[in-house]
Each structure stands twice: as C-alpha cells, then as structure tokens.
Amino acid sequence: MTGQAGRRPAYFPWFVAPAAIAAVVLAAAMAALLQYAFRQHVPGSLQVGGFTLDNFGRMSSWVYLRVFADSLLLSACTAGFSLVLGYPLALALVRTRSAALKSAILIATIIPLFTGDIVRTYSWLIVLGKNGFVNGSLKWLGLIETPFELLYTMTGVTLALVQYSLPVMVIILSAAISHINPDYEKAAASLGAGPLAVLWKVTLPLSMPGILSGTVTIFAWTLSAFATPQLVGGGKVNMVSNLVYQLGFSNFDFPFAATLSLVSLALIFAILSLLGLATRRLEQAGFR
Amino acid sequence: MRPDGILRLAFGAVVAATLAFALLPSVVVVITAFGEKSLLMFPPDGLSTKWFVRAWTYEDFRSGIRNGLLVTAWASGIALVVGTLAAFALERFRFRGRDLLEALLLSPLVIPHFTFGVGFLILASAAGMSRTYSVVVLCHVILVLPFVMRSVYVSLKNVDPMLERAAASLGARPLQVFLRVDLPLLAPGLAGGWLFAAILSFNEFTATLFVTGQRTQTLPVAMYTYVREYADPTMAALSTMLIAATAFALAIANRFLGLDRILSIQAGH
Image (cartoon, rainbow over all chains, first blue to last red; front, top):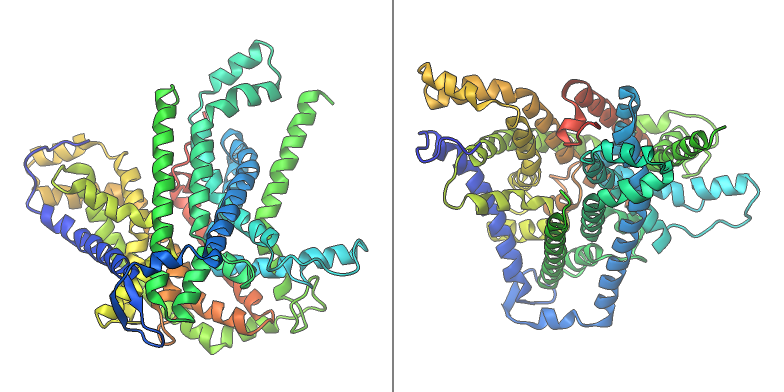
C-alpha cells in the first residue's frame, strides 16, 4: 500500500508537521535527561553544577547495584510466572468456539490492564495486608494464628507484578497461537497423538516466537514498573524506578536520578534489540 | 469419563483458576468498599455505603477528577487528530526521515514512564513551565499517540485503495479523497483508538506523578497521596466506582468495535 509514489498531495506537510513537533518535544525531553546525567548535583539546590562522570561512578556502589539486581530478579520471576499462567489462558482464548465465552475471557483478562496502576496496586494492599484477604481467609479457616508477612516482600511484589503483566502476556501469546494452522494439530491427532502430545510436540513448539516475544517483552516491561513496587514494596523492596523517584523528590538529586533513568532505558533497549535479533533467527529457522 | 473429558475439565479448571487470580484483587476491593469499620480488613464487619459518600465528597478526589478529565479530554483529542494524520501519511507516503519519525512516535511504548517523567520534568523546568497543565497534556499526548496510530494502521488495512483511486478519477481533489473516502471508512477504528487513548490518559500515574503539582494533580496522583496518608476503605469505594466505569467502557468498546481487532488478536481458525 505504498502507492502514489513520487508526487505527494498539497496537504502532506500539514499531516506530518504536528507529529514532527511531538517527536521533537520527545527527543528534547530525552536529550534533557541525557544532559542531566552528566551534571553535578549541588546539594540543597535544584540548580545543577558542571559536567562530570561521577554519576556513573556512583552506580558501582553496592547499594545501587543491589537495586538493579533486585529489579532484574523481580522481572525474571514475573516473566516466567506470567508465561506459565498466560499460556493456558491464551490457548483457551484462541481455541474457544463459543463467541460469548471468548468475549468473557477476553474482558476478564484485560480489565486489570485498564483499571490503572493505582486501583490495581491498592487492591493488592488489601489482598496481602495483615488483616487482608489472604491472611483473613487463612485465619477464618483456622490454618494460621499469626498473619503472614506478604506486604513489603519480594513474594508480594512478584504476585502483584504477575497479575499486572498477565494481560499483555496473553495478548502476545494469543496473537502467536492464532497464527498456528490447526491442520498440523489435526494431522498429529489423526496419526495417533494424544491431546497432551499434540500440545507438547506441535502447538507449543509452533508458538515459540510468541513465547520468546512475550517473555522478553514482560521482562523489559516489568523493569519499568513503578506503582507496584512503590506501594506493595513499601520502601523495603525497591526497583530502579523507586530509587529514581526517591532521589528526585527526597534528595532533589536529579542528575543521579537522570543517570539511573538513562541506564534503565539503555538496558531495556538492549534487551528488546536482542529480542529482535532472536526473532529474526527464529524466522530464518522457518517460523513465521 | 474418557481421558479426553478429564483433560478438558482439568484445562478448564486451570483457565478458571488463572482468571480468578487475575480478578481477585478487583473482587476483594469491591467487597472491602462496603465494610463498616474504618480499618482495612477482610472480610469486612458490617455493611455500609458511607465510604462511597466520603469518596464522592472528598475534595482532593473531586479536583483530581476535574483535572484528570480536563487533561484527558485535551490529550486524547489532540492525540486523535495528530496520530490519525501522522499514521495516514506514514502508511501512504515514502519520505526522508519517515522511519526516524515513526520510531520516535512509537518509542513511548518501550520508554519506562518514570524515565519519561524525569525527562519531561527537566525539560519543563528548563522551559519555565514546571507543573503547568500544558506540560501534563503534552506528556499525555505523546504517551498515547502510539495507541491512536496503531488503531489507524489496523483500520487502514481494511480500506481498499481502489476506492481512493475511483474517487480521484471522478475528480475529487486529494484532500477531498481523504475527508470523504478514507475518514468515514476509518471512523470506527478511530473511535476505538480514541477510547483507548482516553482510558490510558485518565489512568496514567507514573509519568504524571513527576510532572504534576498540587494544583494540577490528576485523580491517580490524588489517590496515591491518599493511600500514603490514610488506611480506610474510602479508596476501596473509589476503586469500585472506577472498576465499574472501566468495565462498562470496555464492554461498549467490545460491543461496537471489537476489542480483539483493536488489540489485533486474530480470530482462531
């Protein structure tokens, strides 16, 4: 649909100009971030000092490396768990014949995506709190005397992050599964493979591109989570985003906050580039 | 029961359990909202609707809703126009810098919102526009543009270029072709894209937290501040209202536009 090559209509500049302005503003914001990352912090002031590389040196401190390590660990766990939970859901979404059931599964799956960070995260505070749903139910059943510590732990943050990423994982996986020609599955079944063997040896390998892309996307996406670790982590479990917020709004150290933001951005771009590379390899290996 | 039947049952159970996990927080928050005591606890003691009254009359929430609707109306409206024109031009024409422009416009999909927030905060203070509505709106426009553009791309795939050529051969000028042929055909997709953008803008929290101030704070920011200060079911009541509104909007979007199309999940064979 590249048609109309060469001659462009008179309206063309008016169509592109507003978007070009938006793109320039975005580029300017990222340039401002880049510039700040190389500036000195003047304690007690919002003004920044001269150019320096100190901010990058400070990152090698154990305190900050630990936050990066925790962020990567949380992202990896979240990606893994949402893959395991998301795959059956995606399969059900694509393969259900009833249109009503399909809509119901779709809406139930994506509602958490649209309720917004704060509503979703606040809900987890009630689920995981000392007098919350989990502890309240267990106590009511007589299974425990003293409540579990779930809030402000890695487990609690992971649970909330998995619920947060599940919709996106399901969307990516179901797009991949819907590309699989069901004739392959029928052929395998007619040759005597049981349903589990068909799933394990045909459907699952053929959905590899979706599995790869879903897992890596969620990994990168979780690295940019803020509200969930901020509230469910409550200052005890910190991701890079929480450190950035704290540096900015408690210490007014925006240069270092900019440095950490920049490093996260670079990390995410690197991960997504690797995904692009791996996807091309898969395509060369015969996957669509 | 045949082994196939057992497998189907087990699969159904796994799917149902996963959906229960996904919906659990929403269900718990709705139940908590009707509690009596000012302590957050589950299951709640007694039944009351007083938290709904408090949520509805709490001044910070009211101004948050007003600010949020203002920002959302401007941001989703501007993004709809800018995104539609840009996506149409990017899809139909080849020009210098096209790939760079597209990459920049779609980049908010992968840039972390906190990075975005810090960048816009620094830019705004350099431009002397700190914590103004303009900055919040601009930030939201750029954040939701990719979603509008995406809905245009998807809808354009279903527009037959022969219709454009037919109109042109009958004497329509290029702008007329766009306004009288393409735009009406794109309308349902655009409505979906706009709704999408509006929901995302109204709920956006992370970047907004960085660029708003006391006077310009939107509802999610006001809610965040409330959670940090109080632990009563007022927030649960407000969340309940927001969940209901979101579910309603999604059901409408699905009924008229087909969410699977907006999200580009293809129908199973």
